Image (cartoon, rainbow, N blue to C red; front, side, top):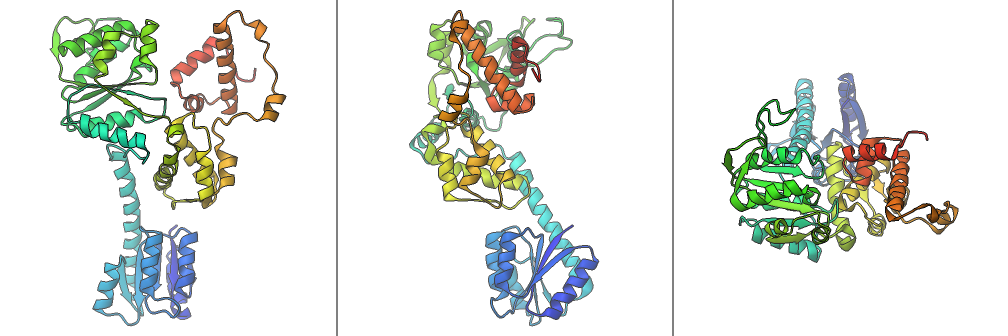
Length: 458
């Protein structure tokens, strides 16, 4: 049911409009002056405002201007007993949907109201659709590190140089890759993404290079791989540090020769692909451990871009928070909530182990659980992201007997099991939510649950 606000200093007009609109099943509220009307607009969600122009305490045109500054998409229909063409034109220029003279014609009033409500719905739907089809979010931040990343992207994107993006999970590596593609000459061609950590090692080669029909048991038809799909565009290889050594060798060959061979095939296929890789691992340490090829590392790291964790750019948190507030509130179709300075400072003080991804989740939680203004107390009550354990909690926690562990690996397994068990119980054994919470793939979490024999209610 649409909610309509009437602002008019004539009681008879307010009563007449209310009677007509309520008969049409609209929810109606009214006030007799513009000052109270603006306060109602600030504190309530209306689908439409009917506003008189000539009022004593505040002129209707002022109400229109102030009202649209508070709620830019709120339709206004201006009404006046002294209507002229000039007045109607002025109202339209200031953003009014339409202008109606007093006494209002019943049919015209209802048609105008219906059209204004339809237009308001279309504006909201259009904004949602634009966000859904928008290709790339902006890289937000004014810190020196972010400024350097933006400058590097501007310099590197127009070239075909390979780029290796490093940084912790949730820090924004994928966004950097998207902007490298967006600002390149390949932006009209596809950007193909592949998460090397999410694909089992025995399937990664098929995923990257494709396979021929019958090349293995489940290969019931020919498949085009990511390299071929990205031909002419960009291939973003996320979590490259988790790729098997055999797949690394084939990727190295593809980068050297610009040719690939499908699994089970013999024909060489030429590909024109720009590769952007990303990892949260220290590849130099992985090379020392024998888990990553040094020659592939040098092929991928023509340009190195490091995305810092959120804890190293805390001054960007207010800007990111305000952006997430607007974005999420718009997605939910609700007025954008305010956030106090104290709440922003409280957010800056938190240990952001999940980086920007965690911050966005926190903002969404605060929007859902808080009132119209998010306060410092709300942050303390609802955010609580991986906060350090208090001294009292540490004292109450049972002490671990380290003598039970034969070696370091045993202790690591024990700690991992207890951590996963704690998170699962915290999320009421919602595996998808827990996987997001601890930032691993859901399939990996299932494997961990099976490995450690975790069962609900144990």
